[in-house]
Structure formats: structure tokens, C-alpha cells
Length: 215
Image (cartoon, rainbow, N blue to C red; front, side):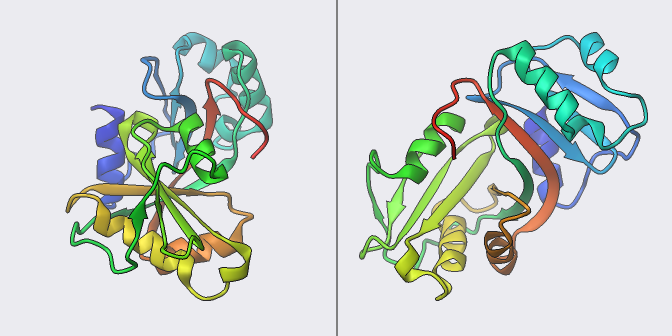
């Protein structure tokens, strides 16, 4: 089964077997490598040898794949940096359009769009009419659709983030699995995507092939 299919099933609530396995997906699957943690099942998405992975990871330690020791060893082997340790949440697009009146923009000078280009392909950007909100879908790990959003400081606390997360479900084709990655410490964004109907499916650390400035 492809990793894309694994994510599709996870978005429907069907998680991989809790068998303690660590699978290595060595083919190039996007702009970033990743370590994905489902409950007691893990994927190392990087061009490394399975033997090396299993030699570095202590058997039976379910915290090790996303732990600092393994991530540092993996980053050193790949010659890259280490991204955020995120919770991954998923929802299904309905494809009925959005009600915010978003306008598609190039977004070349927007920090959120610049960051998305480091991790994703087919990046698109929309803004609210007043520029207070930015929504950025793109294809990330295994080619899945991922979405990020940002609300300007003066417009926060009014539910715009939740409406942006919901808008992504209207912009993409009906039935598409849509994923959002949120650092657990960013409790505001985590509550926002939960309120928009996204459900937790996994944890993940991405390792961009070409690290940019600090996020």
C-alpha cells in the first residue's frame, strides 16, 4: 500500500495496525522528508536504508522515532535540518466553494506562502478581501493535500482562522482528504482546526530538503 493510501485511510478513521513496525519509504515523495508516527506504527519517509533505521532505533521504544536522538541522526545522514514536531489532523473536502470571498494571489512576499514552498508542491494562496487572512493549500508528504493559514494580529480572536480552515474544504474537490499540521504547543491553532472539524490522525516531523530561515 502506498503512503498516500495510508493517509487516505487514516482520514477515514482507519489507522495502520498497532504492531510496532517502523516502515521505510525510501523513494522521493516531495520537497520534505518526514517521520510519521501513528499509534504504535511509524514511517520514515527518506532515502535511507531500513537496516540503518532499525539499528539506530531501540526496539520497542514507541517514543524514539520522533525523539531528538533519532531525528538528529537522520538529519545528519540526510544533510538537512529538522522541522517542527506537529500533530497532524485531517478532514474531508466538500468542494462546494467558500463563503469568505477569498481572492487568489501570488503571495510571493507572504511569510506563510514562502514557508509552504519549502515543504510543498503545487502551492496556491488565497487572501481575504481586507488582507487579514491568508490560506495556503499545497501537496506535501506523499502528495497529500495540506493546508496552512495565518491571521494578521489585528484580526485575531474573531473566528477568522476557523473560517479559513473551513474554506479549504470548499476550495478542494469533494472527497479530498485535507491535512493540517499544528505544533501541539500552538494551542490556539490546534483548537481552531479542531473547531473546523479536523480530527487528529498522527504525529509528524518534517525535514525540508532545502531549509530556509527559522519558522
